[in-house]
Image (cartoon, rainbow, N blue to C red):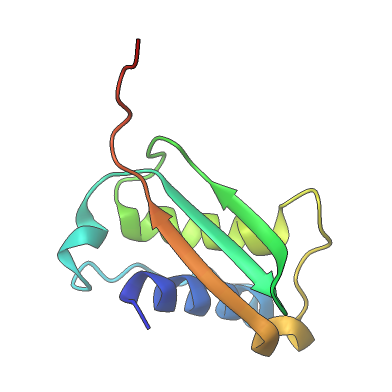
Length: 105
């Protein structure tokens, strides 16, 4: 499992089960210390279950952006009820880190 996906999964599971936001450990991977927009999507049995993201960074690094967007995907996507504890084992996660926007003509 990719480290960003593992971070999203741990973030959601901890938040749903304990109501806590995990602390970001700065010694994970180099890409997690960069600034970028991040989308976190959840699927359950192949169907979308939540997806939240940011086009531009709103936090100090990709790691924190992933944590916050993962929790939001599980709890704040207005299209779905918040994820419940009994669903956690059925979720598949994807994390997309966006590059800087480019001007187009």
